[in-house]
Amino acid sequence: MTSPITSPTTLSVLNGEPRVITVGAELLGEALDRQAVPRRRVDWRPPLPGTAAALAAALTDPCRERANEIAVGRMLAARPRLVGVRPAREALGLEPGTFFHAGPPITWERASGPLRGALIGAMLFEGLAATPEEAGARLASGAGITLDSCHHHGAVGPMAGLVSPSMWMLEVVDAEHGGTAYCSLNEGLGKVLRYGAYGPEVIDRLRWMGEVLGPVLAATLERTGPIDLRTLIAQALQMGDELHNRNRAATSLLLRELAPAVVEAAPGHAAEVLRFVNGNDHFFLNAGMAAAKVSADAARGVPGSSLVVAMARNGTDFGIQVSGLGDRWFTGPAGVPDGLYLGGYGPGDANPDIGDSTITETTGLGGFAMAAAPAIVRFVGGDVSDAVAATTSMYEITLAEHPAYQIPGLGFRGTPVGIDVTLVARTGLLPVVNTGIAGRVAGTGQVGAGLVSPPAEAFTSALQALTDG
Image (cartoon, rainbow, N blue to C red; front, side, top):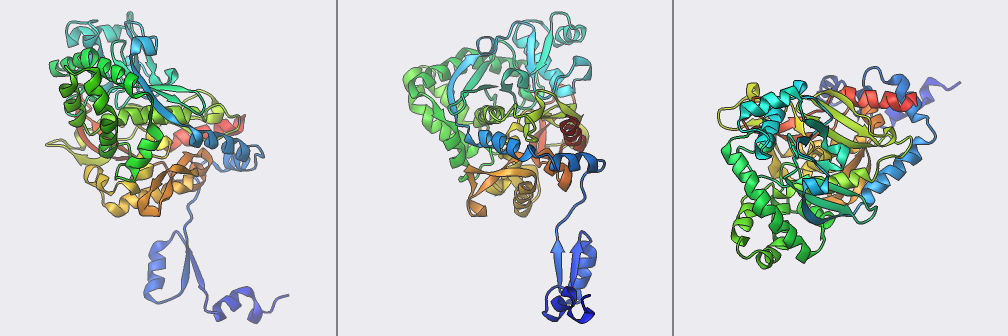
């Protein structure tokens, strides 16, 4: 039996090592600091409630670690290339009356204001209704209308994410695995369809995009050939973007790639096209989303893997998909972002979170890369230390660090990538998402930007499904 005088605890005290370990109770820890009592702080959080049995089963599964290595390895190896721009009717086989939207599947009855507004606008744009009232009535009846999730068709869309047959889509191919993903063209800021606005200026802009912007970009990419989006994103991160709410550097880099070929391909439209792209700092967002989608899709379908391959919101529900669980959605209520508001808007005007743009966080960008973009805090709130803390906390719930997407302010450490539902449940940490805020009333448009947390039940239900086999 060890003598009390020579026990390890006593020796640590005699050696001047910390004599108190504090876990979680920081108020008590600070009191010890004021008394100059040496202590060692252990950062520990309890697992999410009700997950103990599922966590025990998942963490002792002998196949899970290897499955996750394969899945995240595929995600990291993806090499997205922008190869073309095509109408959705051609790229996705969309028929009149069929619309794809952001987030998990939803019906008109449960759709939020921004999604309803975007659907009304798409009906007007496609000539399926003459007035907003007629469009709303037809959508409510469901006659000749089909709604489905963009994610079910290899596509993503920001905010409402509405895709209709006449809209032009960016086409991105994974040169490593051969997958393809699509995303609509970015409309710019102000009152736009993706935020649920559908006034005449919105429809006129969409028509110009279909008649001029889309065809010009298609002809441009025929001249440039494939554009390496992985390299472009890596450069933009080192220039202050995080590739979700800040895309200024990425848009500038893309414009440099496209501009000469735009002039060659369409000299009569070059000025208006280049002026439109140059005036829209978020133009690259949609290309980045398609790059993230094709990278995440490469990691799908690995049996036993607990890697998240999609996070998406439809303005009502927040849903995730997991590599080892096929196309099943695990959902919870979408939260209202906490952030900064435009003009006279406030939290009462905000719709719950909406959009497929969380595919950026799914692949290590956006909220996960905020430490690379300290200026983002001027848009979403907080201060620079909050941005750094957000990124560093995400290393605790991810499986890897991206070899190409690096953060200068963290010593060129790779961004945290590969959300693991078991790590989310074990740590109680939820993914950090930065996002635009849509007005809850159809037709309002954007009212602000901020941060939001996904619902914990989306991750706990996915974990349970993994362990139920």
